[in-house]
Amino acid sequence: MIRFENVSKVYDGQRRAALSNVDVEIDKGEFVFLVGASGSGKSTFLRLILRELRSTRGRVFVAGRDLSKLHSWKVPAMRRQIGTVFQDFRLLPNKTVHENVAFALQVIGKSNATIKRVVPEVLDLVGLDGKGDRRPDELSGGEQQRVAIARAFVNRPMILIADEPTGNLDPATSVGIMKLLDRINRADTTVLMATHDSTIVDQMRKRVIELDDGEVVRDQSRGVYGYQT
Ligand SMILES: Nc1ncnc2c1ncn2[C@@H]1O[C@H](COP(=O)(O)OP(=O)(O)OP(=O)(O)O)[C@@H](O)[C@H]1O
Image 1 (cartoon, helix red, strand yellow):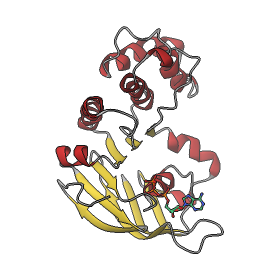
Image 2: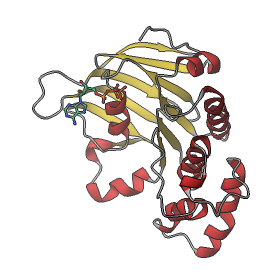
Image 3: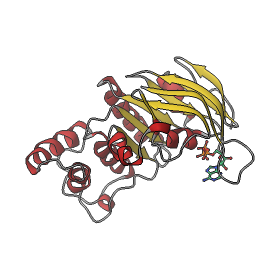
Image 4: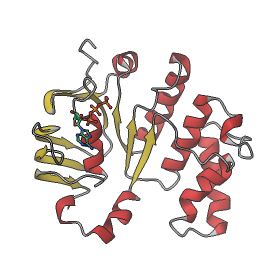
């Protein structure tokens, strides 16, 4: 589903590589934690998959496509196969929960009938049944993250990328969010999550890929967080 073939990324004007010779393969339906100290290259790794960045050397494949060969006009269609969730939720503040999720479908041209049917289903799935008319500032942090997950998942993407999704949440709320991501993964969505949350990584025992200074220094199935910050 995702393949890095000897990938290096050097940002313009930098001497040091943000990623060096990364060789990683992630299969359909896997759940993978990406860990490593601040600046180790996690966001760079995720942004290469979204083609927000291009590799300097090596090739990145998503669903069999070589992203270095993908025409710019095909990038939006490729990104539609990938849902994204961030630490800071990134909801539209003046829209309701329902509208935030519906918007993701409107921009890809789904019919009003589909939107009306699908949005309540996904809000129910993430545990926000009955909260569709609220605005983000009328929700807790955990609920806002559920909206963001609903929005990322409503189009049933093949891949869900989560960059520190529990970074702004307390431990109990984080557990609820992780249960939700686990459920989404069990529905055969490949989940890739960058995190500094050692408790969660240690509890979930999923595959762990550790980056250190841009290099993969560990790739462990049923892994643990495993390093000191
Ligand atoms: N746009 C950029 N231009 C130049 N250097 C960058 C840019 N973005 C990141 N870097 C550098 O690349 C390296 C990897 O950064 P990256 O953001 O991928 O790390 P990270 O593991 O996601 O960190 P964090 O946990 O703090 O989010 C760092 O040395 C960083 O300073």
